[in-house]
Amino acid sequence: MARTLTASALLVTAMVAWLSIGVGAQSAATVVADASKATGSETLASITYSGSAQNVNFGQTRNIGTPWSPTSITRITTYTRTIDLSQPASRAFGPTQPPTVPGAPAPMPGNFNQNITPAQSNWTQQLEIWITPWGFLKGAAANNATSRQSGGKTLVSWSPTMKSPSGQAYFVVGTIGDDNLVEKVETRVEHPVLGDLLVEAEYSDYKDFGGVKVPGRIVQKRAGLQTFEATVTSATANPANLTELLTPPAPAAQAGGAAPAAPVLETQRLADGVFRITGGYVALAVDMGDHIVVLEGPQSEARAVAVIAAAKQAIPNKPIRYVVNTHPHFDHASGLAPFVAEGATILTHENNEAFIQRGLTASRRLVGDALSKSSVKRNVEGVGERRVLRGGNRTIELHHVENLQHSDGMLIAYLPTEKILFTADFGIPNPGAAPGPVNPSLTVLVANIERLKLDFGPYIMVHPPVPDRPLTRADLMTAAGRGTN
Ligand SMILES: [Zn+2]
Image (cartoon, rainbow, N blue to C red; front, side):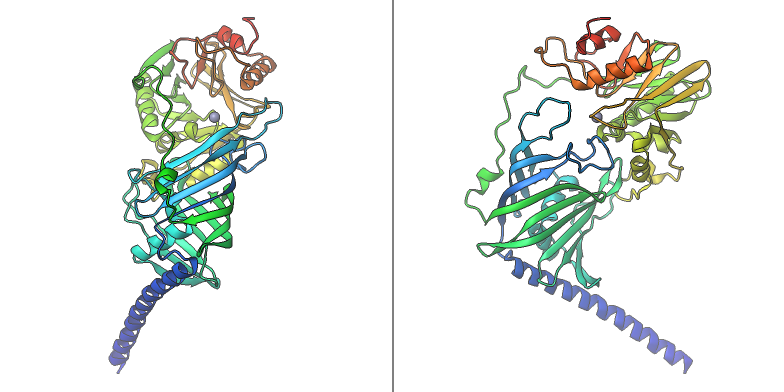
């Protein structure tokens, strides 16, 4: 009797499971079909829509953790996005008005341009197509979507055939409202700083444009932070001038012909135990007696791996205990993960500490880098106005650069014995460049150097001068319009 009951119970359980899968799959198809009908996208092969938009350059803003701020927002005064679902391809463009920054000259208008071609088979680009309402529904219809109820809403989920660098599936999850319109779509994409980065798009205020429903308001978020919004005022389904809309302007003719060769990695000895590593963004490796400090862990995983190898070759048999992050902009932070996997502690200004810590402790299921496979503890230490590292007979001073618009979490490094100053993003004009106004960042840097009374000779920049040559205090002062005093 007990056996029969158990068998019956198992059978019932199996049937319920089977039924719920079957019903779920069937209802997902119905949900997607109903939403496609409500949106008018059943016969949609392409769409173009226009309005106004605002965006921020995520990962490059003054405060890394609060990107959506008046001094970071660029207005795209006329914004047009076109999507060809059949290729798939997309292009967005429009004239821009960059933010006005207090104390800086009025910014020049520019142009927003984003081209996504079928050849760009990475999810970072492609997701811009598949998280739109029409892309989402088309993807759901073609990729065995599933659905479930959550909080009174219907969630539809599907995976594209494209896989992440680690070989894992991506997921696209859309929220369908009572009116069968797509309210929200989210996905995750691999990111060197933020791990499995959440990308969300919210759609509201739908309007009818010739039978196709188009959201009047679009908001995008990354890592939960707003990065884009648009107000859509016109739209056309299956535009006749699709090819024209998708074709970017011809690139400006290349002056000087062939592109310059990629820089070669070289390790140059600047002083006893101090090495400059070239071949990309410049890093310094410093011998601290029983360990190594690396200044800057740029700019990608590959570059960081090369810098780590060069540092260990120059200073053998010592661990890299610290990597100093000059500032958290993604081109300077995208090589931090390999240092963490090495067991190094990241030193960054305290304004960036929480953001970097959150990024490096996030799930890295999609990323598939060395850190994603490592259980090493993620150590991030915030630096205040000043921190001094000592080891062997060497000292490294880290100083916060005050009143800097480019980043509120910028550190510079000073080696008092060797009288070396190391900085990022305080660009010096190339020789032969047309004379122009002094870069306001240089003025701020010089004010900080004078405040801190830093007495240095060699001036080492993360962005090497072009052509690469040794720079000194005199070069910096000249570029800052201060003569050579
Ligand atoms: Zn920067």
